[in-house]
Amino acid sequence: MDAIVFGATGFIGRSLVAELLTRGQRVAAAVRNDTLTPWLATQGVDTGGLEIVAADITRPLSGLPEVSDVYNAAGRFAFGLDAPEARATNVTGALNVLEWAAALPRLRRLVHISGYRVSASDGRPDYSALGAYEASKTEGDIAVRARADELGIPLTIANPATVIGPGQYIGLATLVENLWNGRLPASPGGPDTFVPVTTVDHLVRFLAEIPTSPRGEHYWVLDDSTPLLPELIGTIARHTGVRAPRRTVPVGLLRHLPRKLTGADPETLSFLSTDRYPTASARAFAATAGLEMPPVADALRAWSDELVAARFGSARPWHSAYGFESVAGSRTWVIGDRHRPGHVLLHGLPMNADLWAPLAARLPGPVLAPDLPGLGRSAATSRSVDTWLADLLSPVRTRPVLVAHSAACGPALRFAVDHPDRISRLVLVSPSFLQAPAPRFVRSGPAVRMMRRMSAARLARALGVPEGGEVESAVADLRRPGVARRAAAALRTDITERGRSRALLDRVTVPVQIVAGSADPLVAAVACPVVEIDGAGHYPQLTHPSQVARYLGASSAVSGG
Image 1 (spheres, rainbow, N blue to C red):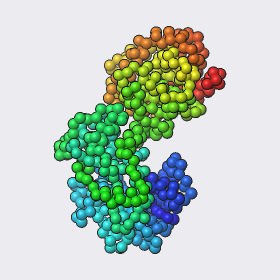
Image 2: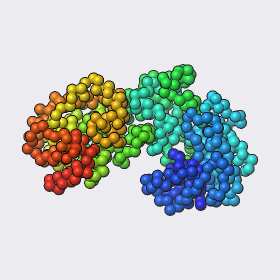
Image 3: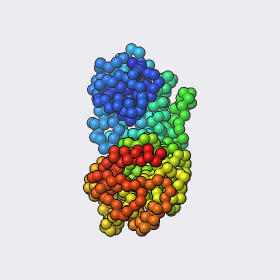
């Protein structure tokens, strides 16, 4: 084999394996449990040059394949560890990798991945002051350097900053999560606090080049242009459409405040510093290797999209295309193809665009599914929903089928009347203006509080749908500041618009079809075709997605869409 990667199932390690394999190298991945191979398959990486080997670096190593390059990406990255648990991997494990590498007859380079806050001092770090994670990484750094010098091993240490990218849900991600959920009243640290970042893609390309670098060099891999922490938070806040904190809280004060109040793990506070780092050698080597960091603001925005899509690690996105876009002056969460969709899907209440996941998986061609303004993950807007919808669909170059559910049927109808040349047909799923109104309690103040506190199981029972990711996604959004209140307001608006929507139904010139569940039938007669799905309630796209998809397909064939 060309290389071995320890910690190959970790956030950095798995991406490093993918990079090396893509370069045509033969790679041994040292793991305890093979979760790597399925992940590589999802990334489309050819695993023909991969060998999975079992290894526990907390014990002396033996029986591993002979290689020329050794990467130790194994590390225990977590806060709240006790010292023995942290040292087992970050100190003892690092030395075990080094001792095994020292016996390799053709060792070209041992690359040890450390951390940007480590110190090259000779003294033992203060575990009580730093916490077990940072102290153990520092101790491991010192021990590896000393032992490599004794044995004459060609060692290079890479000290990456906070690594961001798909799959990184700890560290700085926790701060972003608090910002997103309205639990960040102030920016931690001072106005000049510097928490540098680097992207995982840049880091693994850099690591892959290290075996060819000059011996004796060690590299701090980080983006010096990372904005100071308050501006970093502001960049993410502006992109996601949430309010950025206006104040900062000094680290000294944070240390004395209760964790319940600050939401900050005490171990993270040492990372809130104004320190700068010796990046000259890393920048020079990157330039020699032809590596260039992506613009940091773009990287932060892309990572923010991924964090929100994955619910900060608790969910898996159902579509590969997603992110925040500006629509009618509002930061709007958009899923799918905004230019050539076959179906545009508008969700009802109290859900978000994830409502359509089971149906979208059964539809041919690309879809476009946004969160309506002020609902789900989209920010509120001062513009009308009609203006928002027209702006959303302005880049569309096809004539898609416009599919709307429940309260979204009114705006969809108005768009169809105003822009008949923009869509091929209109499908109304459980149109609320043709059904019994929601109980008054659902639209009242107590209901807003209830929605904010409701569990996924309880909401699923209330809606008569299966408890799954779509409901959990809705619950997560309803707990964010203002979303439940705006959902209740949208219900009240829908009630007042019912008569207008019924009248508009006769003015639509494009083909119109209606889908309703037998348990939630229409209360008014209509002239357009209606299909009633037996056993379904108000959310047939969740409970009977295959039947709804078959109907849409049959209607498409009839209408020529």
